Length: 214
Image 1 (cartoon, rainbow, N blue to C red):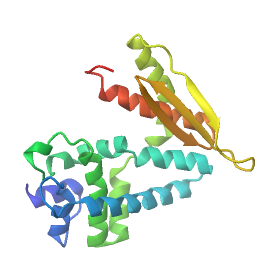
Image 2 (image 1 turned 120 degrees about the vertical axis):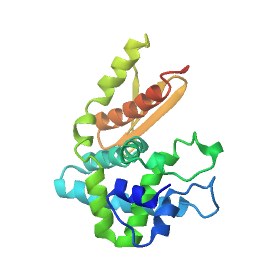
Image 3 (image 1 turned 90 degrees about the horizontal axis):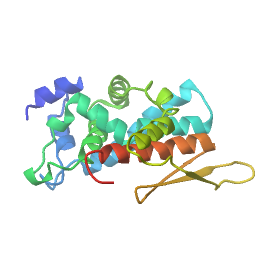
């Protein structure tokens, strides 16, 4: 792997090249790997995303739902592949099917950039690579997309089970969606948002298994 090629793909040049190499190294390749950076990057990413969403406004529930979408494995997998990070991973040959590594490496890279260049550098990288507009319209489409996908395969329409798990002062709704022998659970401040998040999880499962048995 060429460090300069990875830096070019990221749009950031590291002062400490070892930080980048560490961010790209999986546990299967070395005892010194990106797990700690992944942990730290998760927190940094949530802060950066939360700050932008807060500035744009919205209810607590709406902001929480947007953040969940933006920092989800699906979103980070997409941006990691777009940047080509999946091709820069340092791992053993037996670990080539590790799908979790692809979204996680983005978090590790965010932490590495933060440690190398500070918060502003990490923020610049995040804002330039994540698609913040994507979470707005997509939140309203998951239920419809799931229903269309199920009907195309001859499956019945999904049934959503709602439970109010909040308090009289502050409602919080839990939604359970049972499909394919799996339970997809989500919580939000309103039923509609919780249903969308549960549908999104079920849709991801359906898409990941489109070539196999459900």
